[in-house]
Image 1 (tube, rainbow, N blue to C red):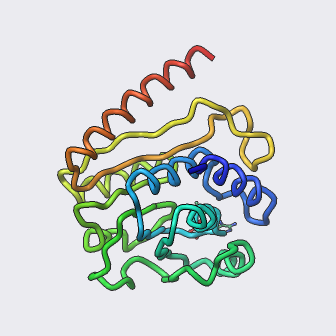
Image 2 (spheres, protein in one colour):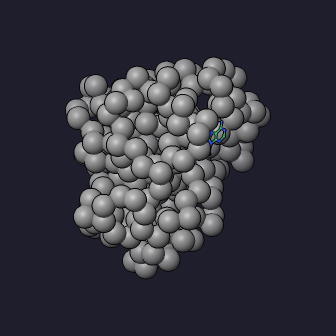
Length: 211
Ligand SMILES: C[S@@+](CC[C@H](N)C(=O)[O-])C[C@H]1O[C@@H](n2cnc3c(N)ncnc32)[C@H](O)[C@@H]1O
């Protein structure tokens, strides 16, 4: 499945929208779609929908991948208005103002964190043994919180080895940003995935240093 093409197309689309300064990086979108595909994700929670770049990418991808149940949080009025215009399948989003409002019986295969939320601790109720967590960008404070909530979690950074494309809102002299992959309850398969990502990140860092 061509998740990289979907990521590029959606990033390009959102690059021209008002409020584009906080959208997810192109490489982060690629990571999110790859993880969705690799872990056969069916139910997603995104914390910080913003103007809708991530959710639009996932729902566009779902046209070839299959149905995805998408929950998201947002409380910024500007973003709430923009979401309606920007996301093709807006009606599929189950929208909440923050994580604490979600029924604790709901369990998510994939939790994407791309915004601040004072009630982040409630993700402890929403994760289960198959859950994958991805934090967009660096966000060391949120990584530390999540590791604190899940003491057995394993964490690896996902980085790109290419610079921001010139059609986007971010400086083309900077690397396209990825994110932080966390497995709260790591299975053997997750541990293998973690090590593969660790090696990939190590090799990309070396390539970056030589560029
Ligand atoms: C990094 S942004 C989320 C981006 C989102 N996931 C996307 O890909 O479009 C984090 C938070 O910043 C706020 N935000 C995002 N874009 C904004 C804008 N253009 N103006 C004001 N607040 C914004 C929202 O509350 C959002 O939850």
